Length: 135
Image (cartoon, rainbow, N blue to C red):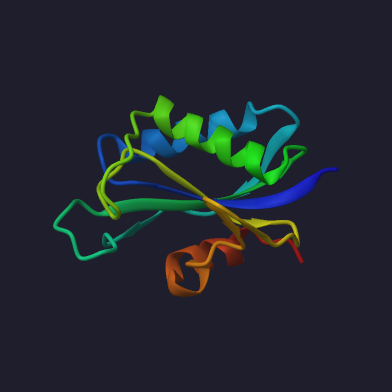
């Protein structure tokens, strides 16, 4: 089954715009997946109160045949390909990809909650989501 999914892309290390571009291209290259729309990029202050560079953020709407867990694993592989290492929570990162929505599905599994529980707290995600949502 094909689902319309919304993912958030963020980067605050290295060439931030290039990391987001690489993420968009990699998402479009996933099996049974295509990028439908992307929001404008927005620079935001880092979350979590750590002293670190500003983030560049973007939201992408994609259509995929992948299941939620498979998409999560693919997103984590894309992050790793862009140099992401998982360390402390809120730490700087070359690329962060979060699944915000997966159609109308609700998922609550270890390491995967959809809709993303932080969506109500991230104004920049909400702005991006409003840009890419189809009526």
